[in-house]
Image: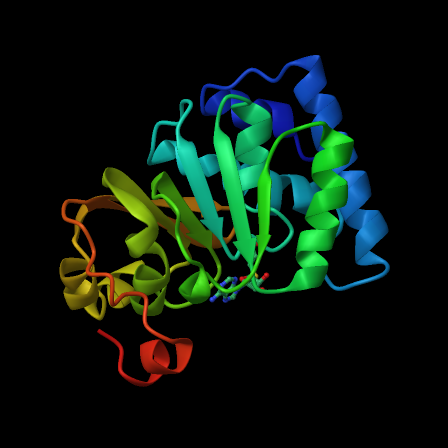
Length: 228
Ligand code: SAM
């Protein structure tokens, strides 16, 4: 492996333990093994997985401090960003919801191999009947920001945050999300941009100031056809 993962995470203030290094190895091997049977990710070369999935997921800490909060990861796919964050911060309490059953099946195997705790839910965020809200809700590469706000902000506790991990067009997406953020009880707190090789990445942190009306999230076809 040419890419130095340890050095990258050390540059953002994290020293990996032996156990964490082993867990990332197990994560990589399990991802490759399952990717042969089903499509989890197109990024599969080792350096790329470590950089574009593992390190990029951890980059969330550039925008938001992680401690022992509760975190809901909407549309986590093969576990990003919540599983790398859980490896780094074992005290974080993670819940994952994903619409694709096969991805949840993969994650069940993965969390057992990594020996970590995670609540794994097969379902669509907009149909999820929340028992409680979360300190943090994350989403990486799931939908445009406007729709994502409606899928995620209702599940954030008042006083908590929604963190969207986006690509190069954050400013454009923010322009069409202002009203959605306000209606759902949020306010932009922080946004950052960073470079991952040639790719421009961005993160926006939205504070939850007010309770969201129980009418949100609406059904998916409504979210899509009449965005807030
Ligand atoms: N977050 C991962 C990442 O960064 O690699 C996965 C991204 S993948 C492009 C999008 C994932 O979101 C898929 O696994 C899909 O099943 C899930 N998804 C899309 N819409 C969803 C919804 N409304 N509720 C739950 N999961 C959803």
